[in-house]
Amino acid sequence: MTISCQPEADGLRVILHDHAPPFNPDEVPPPNTTAPLEDLKPRGIGVYLIRKMMDEVKYEFSPEQGNRLTLFKRK
Image (cartoon, rainbow, N blue to C red; front, side, top):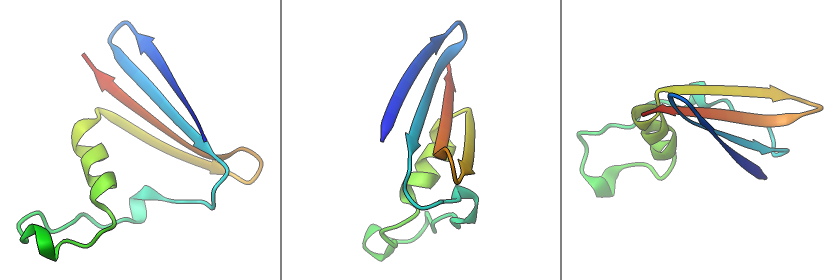
């Protein structure tokens, strides 16, 4: 896995790149945030937090290049 951070005039871009099996974050359903913590499923919380905290999220996959997740947070 490689992680790169690119400061930009209006924020910060973070790119995560790996060659793991394809993963589409759009297929992860949102967690039930009204459920008690002990009832939450162990998967999907990270995707939910990314969506809530980042201003832009872009996922790309290609067999040659692997997975690339680009996150952008404005100042």
